[in-house]
Length: 462
Figure (cartoon, rainbow, N blue to C red):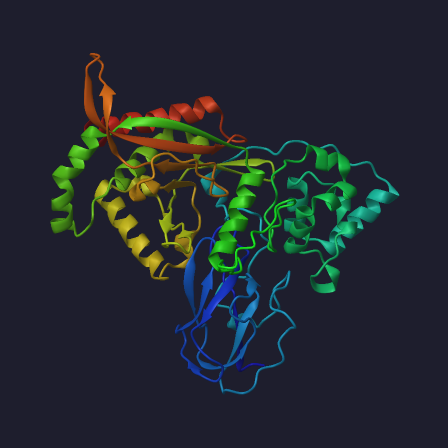
């Protein structure tokens, strides 16, 4: 009806295809103003509050708290005159968004998920995809091609290919989507059942990685019994914790992770920060941590070793010309969020410090905008702020690498003249995707970052 507006799940980050309804901020029957906060949504990239796209009365909630909703699917209906809404679809979680009137959309229509954030063709160097042998033309292949069109989406087919399975496995997967279409959750649940995968494609399964693909249902460990501890508090894996579990499991599964380390003598950096810490607080109103210095050294290294600033999708390597730095922000024990500093290489130390402080503060209060959690080309995590010494981080897809900073400790250090003195030492951990980056390149990049941090005065004066 012309006086009814559907509020759709907006795109909320790179490779994000769905969100979880965390909390409704309005109830059915309440009046809503345009741009007034309506619902709190959680993804693995951002925890944010979605505003209403129109003024009127909230007449129907289509997705309850805890429900997972596809990008572009309706969450609720706003009526201009408060009239009852048209009966909603049986489920808002659909493979394709329901059609709505053009004026009801405030966000652009969601495209089919590719696993990568939208790429600006003018901002990438694209390598040609590898040539593929054409499949022999046969009646069997014709049936499979017809099945592909009828029962699956490009996302489903990509997941099947990444797990080393033949596309014909679709015949064995019951579809829960519209008209029996196989959804992402259907194929992931099927892959999680190892016996069924082997029955469908024994040769492919034997060559596939042993790590499990992410699943939306409960993760079952064969042969592991659950402790019968009556004092245990049992809660479902849900919300941001469930999304993080799926995304990190997926990253470990598709990307061959390798981690390299470096010990960094940051004694001069500690002294430099001490000199300017109070000035930065009093004159610039910002807390000057070590993180902006590390980000600055990383962005310089990415310009020399651009393979670390790349992404892999569908056989093509995207080497990004711009540097957008994702910074892991802890949400206490509930999870973490990865806001992005756009064009981080163009900012100075104080500007980076302000950007980190601002994004972290708004991430913890659910005030990030959707665009501020998408488009990263590299990621930095800082467990050292909590005392972490050495760790092996998991890559934030679709980045090629992630760097962890450890806590700074006073340690005995052998100087060039063989004297042993107390110095401030920090470990850096770089996890990289071996499909895109080789050991030599990763080590040279990390040594470049190390040198810049150890000679911080020369580096910043260049």
